[in-house]
Image 1: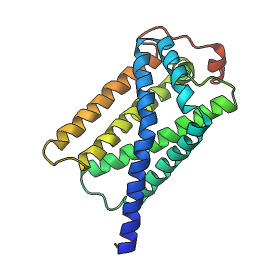
Image 2: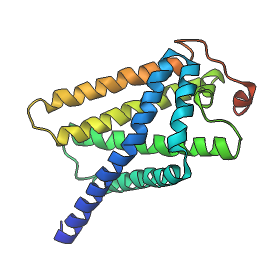
Image 3: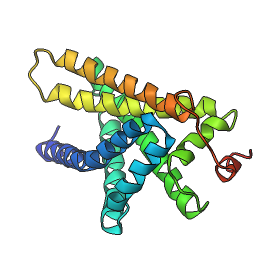
Image 4: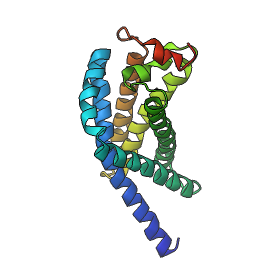
Amino acid sequence: MQPRALAGQLRLRGLHRLSAMLVGVFLLLHLVNHLAGLSGQEAHMTFMAKARAFYRHPAIEIPLIGLLLWQVGSGLRMLVRGWTKRRGAVTWLQAISGGYLAFFLLNHVGAVIAGRTLLGLDTDFRFAAAGFFAPPWQWFFAPYYFLGVVSLFVHVGCAVYWNVARRGRAVLLSGISLLGVAFATSLVLALSGALYPVDIPAAYLATYGQ
């Protein structure tokens, strides 16, 4: 690889890592929101209402969406560029998890924006859970959310793997990935109504023709 091309690739990777840390603040808040939601639908919505005062302020939300788009775009560019050069299970795990995460973020953010602007719905817990109560859509949304959360943890785990001492890093990656599986399972159970009763208004179900 030419020195200029290598420098460009390293610069892209550095900017991708920087934007990941900034986006990570929002994702962490989002994950804490779902943890709060394990105690009930109202708890989830109450926490979200407070968190939205921060991340839905135009001065925060607009740059955040821009960062998310950059994160996805830069990640996909690196994914395509390095497709034939990857060696080893962890490099492929990082690529596959990053690819699915890009798909998930684009769809999830797009659905939220469309729900708010086109459908006039409050894109809260009820919006996320509605698909689980509109057969046969639950067969799409269960793996969709599960894999979305798992891919986030796995991708973060891979990043940690490359930035810690060689000894024990495989155990660390496995631990972060298993934490993601546990978190994703609890999220799907909560959204599907397996943990507690879930109330979905007719307006949300109507988007699925129910």
